Length: 127
Image (tube, rainbow, N blue to C red; front, side, top):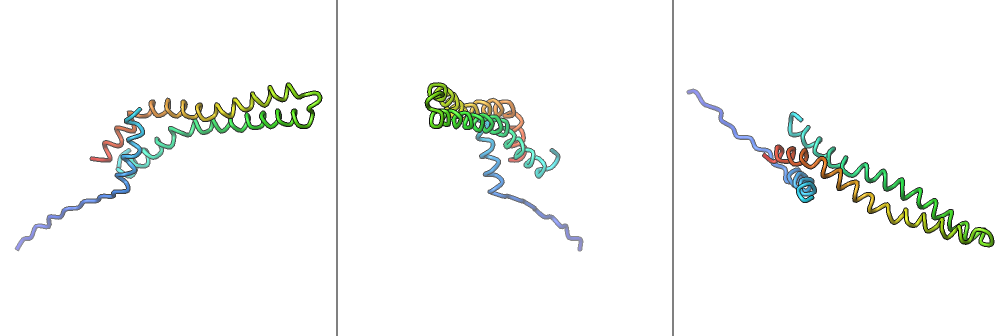
């Protein structure tokens, strides 16, 4: 008797599919193997927000220091530097407020730039 060994193998991970779909959703609105492609998809997703994070953190930290300098001028040297301290503090406050919108703008531009690659990789992984 000659038996034929027909097997069916299927691997499904709902967590992986959910992650792929959640990353893909970010890019729809606005490798060699699946493991490498998934890792590439993750790296692309992380790279979309990294430049915005770096720039906004830098602006936020520098602006906080400027704001603190303005407050120091007002509180410690109020007889000589009260008005300049207010101007310096307002400048620092404006930078602090601007950090979040700058992050959003940079991240949206970056996502728009890499969206085709994200969509292509996610479609390959979902097949």
